[in-house]
Structures are given as structure tokens and as C-alpha cells.
Length: 189
Ligand SMILES: [Zn+2]
Image (cartoon, rainbow, N blue to C red; front, side, top):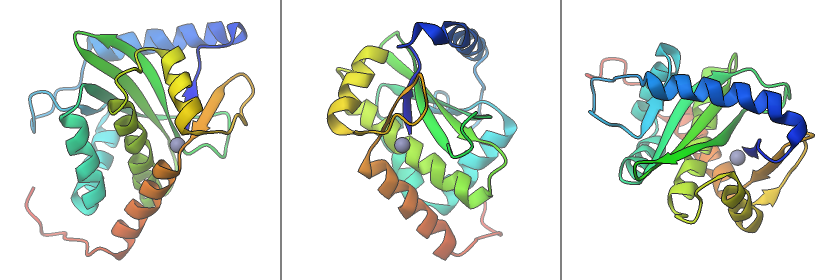
């Protein structure tokens, strides 16, 4: 799912809270030992564990992370509590600064681990789609782009929501990989 929270004035208060939270994130980026500047940035120990495990078990997730690392898109990863109980995850626009474009991937907390990994792959595909579309520079151009390449779902009042077949396919593929793959518990980090 991809949402554009900017359009409705009625949502302004909620939007202000969202962006103040975002500013806090950007002010205190999580430092990881693996890479000096990874483009996939989990915000918590829990999301860091999810990303690490997903990358270890899913070649697709590794490929999506590699593509983002080679792009100008930086994706923060966080768990969120959605008002829509059917929503598993979403990508929202943050900002453009210093030659980078910043998005946030929010995943519904409290789901089964394989579901969260599949949702992560799904949302990483959206981030890769954004990386491949340099015309996306704000929420308006984001909505315009997905209006062209995506399917408008709009089931949440006040939000423009979109979906792509590619993201659905990536989620399904990641789920197959982790369900059929051998869990290498003795593998070195
Ligand atoms: Zn989606």
C-alpha cells in the first residue's frame, strides 16, 4: 500500500504530528555497524532484527536493499499501529534534501514474523519504484506517478491510496522464499 497523507486539510493536525515525528527521526538517525550510510534504515532494535532476518532468508529482500543502496532513495523502517486493521504496511513521503529522497516504510506491528517479512519486501518494492522515478520529489508528484502506474484503492477515507502488481508479487515471492528456504541457524553473521 502506498498512501499520500497530504491532500486533505481535515488531516492537517495528524499530518503535523507525523512530520514532527519524522524530524525527530532525521535528527537522530540510527547508526548501524554494517555500513556507514545504508539506504534502508530501521528505527528500532525490533525493525533492525526484522530487516536483518529478512535479508538473510530472502534473496529477493537482499536484492531490493541492494537496489536502494545504489539509488538516491533512503527508506526508514518503523512499526506503526494503523486504524485500518486490514492494512499491513505502507510507504509515505518524507522529504528531499541533499540529493537524497527520503521515504518511511511503516509496518503493522503484532503480525506473524513471516507476514512482516513479506510486507517488508512488498514495501521495499514501492521504495524501488520511487527510486526508478526521479520525477517524484514531493507528495503531489508521488500521487501523480502512482495514479499512472498503480491501481487506486482509496479504501481509507481522507487518504489517497495506491497499489501495484509488482509490490504484490514481491510480497508473495518473499513469503515463498522464507517458507521454503532452509533456516541456517548456525550461519555466521
Ligand atoms: Zn503496496
